[in-house]
Length: 131
View 1 (cartoon, rainbow, N blue to C red):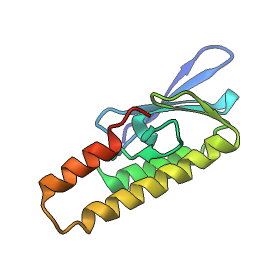
View 2 (view 1 turned 180 degrees about the horizontal axis):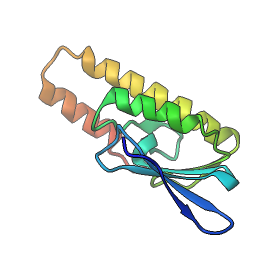
View 3 (view 1 turned 90 degrees about the vertical axis):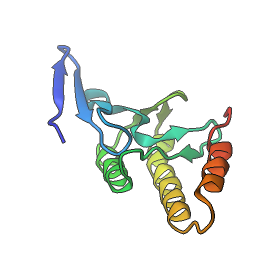
View 4 (view 1 turned 60 degrees about the vertical axis):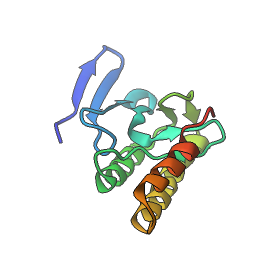
């Protein structure tokens, strides 16, 4: 993984963090002075109901390690992709929710015994929804 890149804005630092697991070239941005973290899709897609669509396109283990690394930053404000910011307890809880969703999906795929096409179709219908 590449090193973080800090952008000094004078009174704030934007720490650009290469984020593994989701996709090649994925970044998260940490603002340490505000305890804010914008994860882009590195956390997965969070629906309005609080559930997650895990997005470990480049690797499950890398995705889970990235969740641990980002969670260790202890953000008070969290900006996951697509669905508005979270703060306080909701920001903290989002990491556990993403981790549980990823684990469940990984196990479901690993233990699937039927046709791959059927699993793909089922997962598509479950995860690609409006909210």
